[in-house]
Image (cartoon, rainbow over all chains, first blue to last red; front, side, top):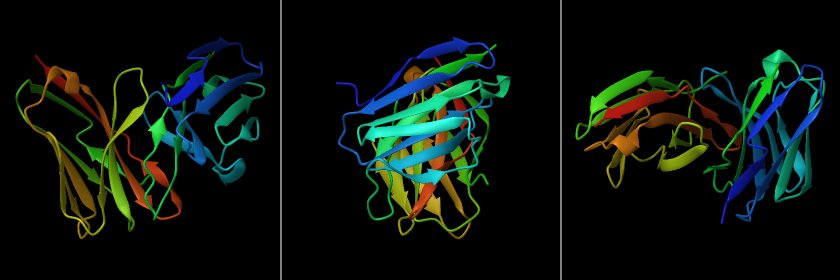
Length: 114
Length: 110
C-alpha cells in the first residue's frame, strides 16, 4: 500500500563512514527526487531523476551519489560522512505535467552522524 | 535561492478557531502548492492553485493567490487538534524544481 517508501527510517553512523538510503515508489511516477531537511526544517532539493536519468543536481558535494536502477527506485549513497550531513532525507516522486508538479513524499530517513 | 517565505513561523490557536498562514515569493510562478508535514513524517500535498486562479477551496482549506503581491494565504477553518503540523508553501515555475519555504508550525490546542 505504501506509495513512497524509504529504508532505513533511522541511520546512526560515525564520521567517515559510507552509507546508503533506498527509496521505492509504486505510483508509476517517472520522476523521483531527494531532499534534505535540516534542523530548522528548511527543505532543499538535492537531486531529481526522470526515467533513470539525472535532470537536477543542485550544489551537493560529490560525496553524495544518487543511483536509479529503474524508474521506481532512487537510492542515495553518501561517502565519507561528515557531521554536517546529519539531517532528515526525503525521497519524493511525481509525474510533472503542464508545469504542475504535485509530489508524493516518503516518510524520511533521519541520519545522525557522530 | 529560497523562493517561498511563510509567515508566521509559528502559530498557536484553540480548537475551533481559524488558522491563517501566509506565503510570499519573489519571482514569477506557474502555480503554488501547500503541503502539510506532521511531526516525524513526510510532506503531504494539500492543494495547488494556478497562477490564473485567485481562490481555491478544499474541505476546510481555503487558499488565495495574489500574483501582483506575490503572496498566498492558507486558511484552515474550524481547526482541530489533528491539524497540528508544519505547513509549507512551494512554488512551481514550469520546468524548474519546486522551491519550498521554511514552513509555519501550527499548534492547535484542544
